[in-house]
Image (cartoon, rainbow, N blue to C red; front, side, top):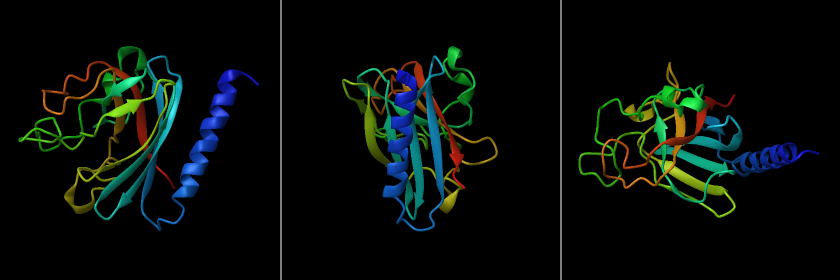
Length: 182
């Protein structure tokens, strides 16, 4: 079996295990995202579960450069332009035009998330939570699954959670379109 096929099988197994781990969370709405890098190669998955106060995001990523990396929710559901740096995904999910940054007194915007820490082997396994967005617009929070969708975008650098417009996060290195799970 080729190395990429083995990696794909391992990722699929990890995703099934993740989904099984959340089998008892009831009938909460769910979504998922498959990430690709700038070469169009798959680099992981996310499972999103809408709860009463926000969205739980379970990330299982691999093949990323080690170190701290910014991750944000972007406002357009496409990763169709990896060679151009995923610019088609637009800016952050931010319909109210708030300032960027979890530590900004005039923020945060709805797409802001904590930084990821990529291990030396290029992997990330983490659960994040956001009360700033919703899958379908619950409690007036912006919807990720609206008419033009949304994406996760991973950046080359860490987010300082204050600087405008993206916290010094730099170029976009990976992208995942958020899609409903039926």
